[in-house]
Image (cartoon, rainbow, N blue to C red):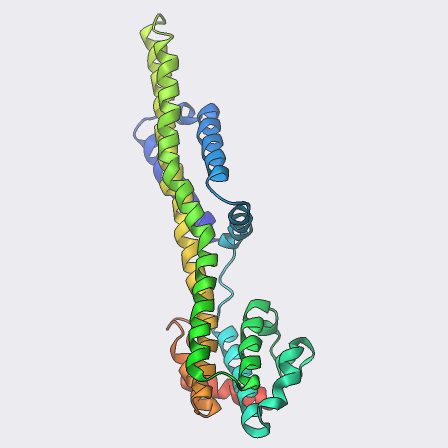
Length: 286
């Protein structure tokens, strides 16, 4: 919703200011300029990205219109799940969670937290490392290094759409200049026309530069920054799981291990110690 509101503000600010200064909005309506700018940008976008990057970008674009799913309630569910799993390990041993991590959808522990279970990426990340812990063949340092490498891969892969959109936005002013130059060429070949008509042609040509810059910095460029922020938000779930599991491997009790995980969250979504403790107590009573 904020994206749409932002676009409306951009349009009102730019076009409204132009109209208030006495400009004629009809002069800015140049669909052929948009065809040249949009067609050139989309073509270059296709040339400059692999099919995998194109697919990832197309899949990521609808998410900019959605709110963030990473709320305080979701983080409390995640940490309650981690607490339940680690408490079971502490009471019954690592082998007791083997069935839970092999089939989390049927696990009575995981099924208590449907919001977390719905995110198959975080569930897979969690169960993979719990499985390594159950194997008993890796120490905490080895698992931490492996986690770091996986998180780095996740970040690089998730950053592909943002980088692709950023490059698309960077190229749009140049395609605006291309459209303007084409307009000037058309004006020069019509030099025999009356001055008033030549002025209109020149104005149409200049609109190409205007549209290229407006589309780049008012519409396409901001999407890149938004996608990067969403990627950073999604990484916090993985970091929370990482820190909590490593704290458990280093011998900390489940309550303290979960507190380690709580501390890595952003302050805007981080529950207080009392809120998390109360949520864990309520989940235990279910």
